[in-house]
Image (tube, rainbow, N blue to C red):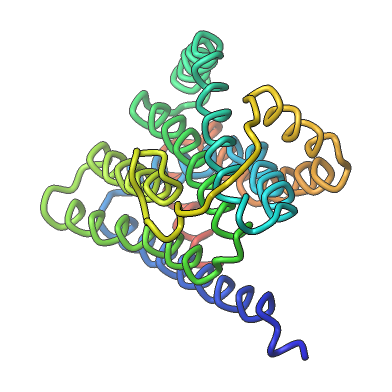
Length: 275
């Protein structure tokens, strides 16, 4: 029956974990609103809006990983994930110059034209890049149907962020310090994810044991990824998601651009309460 299905139970567990994560993030943003003045809060919420918009194209990575790894035999999934991890790192290393150029251009535009501070611009880029890897590890867990672990992973990162963020807000309130804490929480998630798939050279013995896969080059892995990306079932939902996130987040971006920081903070606070 439906209720005895492993997939249904797993989806329910992950749905509950996602809800808990959303509640934690909502609670955290309310505390931030109380801890900072309107100008700082407007800056913080604007940075989150930019991060959400820039992260949408990478949401396709989640679909790609689940589609590719989920289609493999169970004993091959982790080994394929390790290969895909190597491919992802190679992409970043190979395009270091282009990434640096993009980051420099984004920071310049954000600071000089978008009414965003330098620290916020760096924070936005850091959140997007770290989010790519967190999405990657989360998708691996989901592809392996480890729904309880994926839910715990997602909630754990948010819990670390909330607890560490509360210390910052009550002990030495600073927007830059808050940015650092959020980035460190993401790095914590990256380390845990890399440990899980054995990318650190060690990992859960029961998971790594028996991981077998025909040797594939990173070019073949890349070909697998791009073949999935060309599927309309992947790029169409991604474009749709970009439109949805754009409608939700673009208003605050525009308010921050056209109005003062205090106006943006007031708008962000009222918008948060409205949600």
